Length: 99
Image 1 (spheres, helix red, strand yellow):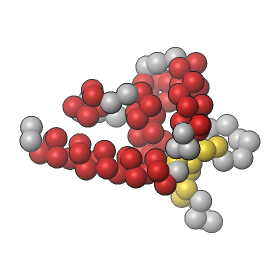
Image 2 (image 1 turned 180 degrees about the vertical axis):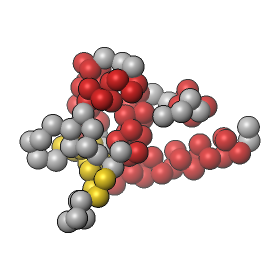
Image 3 (image 1 turned 90 degrees about the horizontal axis):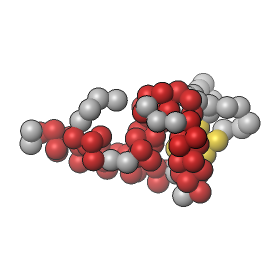
């Protein structure tokens, strides 16, 4: 993630959603998921794994992120999460145009 104005203004919760979004892959069966671990996310954001785990619990409780099976590091974003990210991308594009 680059150091855009949007990233300076958003919380770690949004940044985690954005990392999951940017790391999505599509399987042959059409399943879309993000194959990234909480440790990898913590490293990218330079925050503790404990903090990332706590935020993941909140994101799951809010219906934004779900686990795929029992395998670590496989998460899916809900439609609500995708909508949030897409709208934030539009805002970010407008902010970058005004720079």
